[in-house]
Every structure is written in C-alpha cells, then in structure tokens.
Image 1 (cartoon, rainbow, N blue to C red):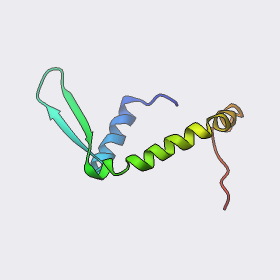
Image 2: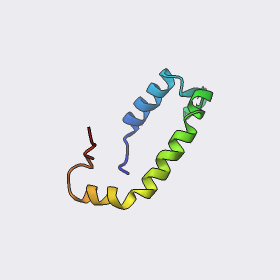
Image 3: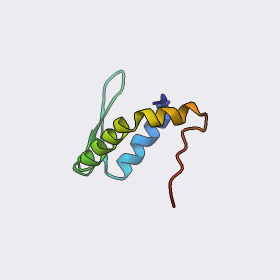
Image 4: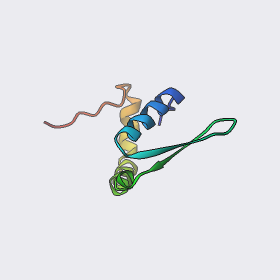
Length: 79
C-alpha cells in the first residue's frame, strides 16, 4: 500500500470527523497532540472493513499482478 502524506491523512481524518465516523480530541500540550477515535457510527463499519481485509487477502496475488502490469491498479468491473 502506498504511503500517504500527512496533509492527505489530515484531510481524510477531518472528512471522517465531519461525517461523524471519528471524533477528534485536542490536548493542550507542547508538542501538540491530537487523538482520533472511532465513534459508534465508525465502529459500526468494523464488520464491513474486516470483510474488505479478508477480500484483499484472498485476492492479493491477483491485485499484485494487476499492479505489475503498470495500469495503475485499475480494475475492470462488469457493467
């Protein structure tokens, strides 16, 4: 999995916070500290995310092969 920049990570976390998937706690200390935690809504995604992980493990070889073709990992999905 490719690395993610801090800027993109923060953008994604803020978007998930805006949608109620995570909560953000800022601690008034030096250096600054921010914790993110899954909300009950976010925790309800756990079974779906676990299923996606299982799917990824089952299809890892096929996905690696697609990556090696240099197509940017694009999958052709049926209509």
